[in-house]
Figure 1 (spheres, rainbow, N blue to C red):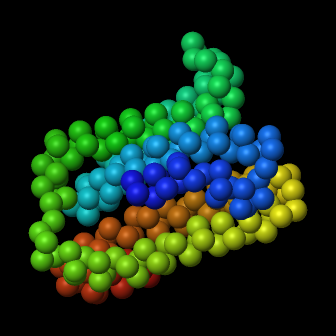
Figure 2 (cartoon, one colour):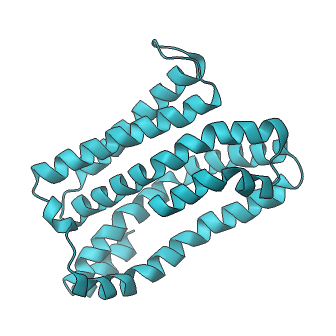
Length: 213
């Protein structure tokens, strides 16, 4: 994620120009994406830490941490966009700064709980397990890439029309996410549960969990 973020930060202008952004819109994209690229490794690390906790049967704390992070994100976005609560008015870049700060807070919360529960050792990985890990993870990563890659392609198609088409699609996407949030939550909860039971060779529990989901 660090490598991808560095590439994105260095070549954001070329990347989004390729999607059809230009002029004032490209300036807005830069204001938003530069801080986001800096913060993405922080988010990735927090997500991995949360997954480690869940895989060890510690379910509620990471959900609470990420939920609180979401609320902090909303408050900071409002404060940074409009210059409220003593914050400077940063406009669209304020959304990015508020989001990245909330990611840092989430990572801190996850790290504290990893330390508190002695789960940091679960992150250690022996070299002889790397091959086995990748053999299991590559299909999962490819599956999870289908959605984002499709989204990028659709955004590219809308970008060839005009920025209002991209904006409208973005708004609809947020509404769709709200409708699908229950399904997404079940999917997120099932992933570490299935991984844990796969490692324990309890396939019957995996089948039962999928049916329940």
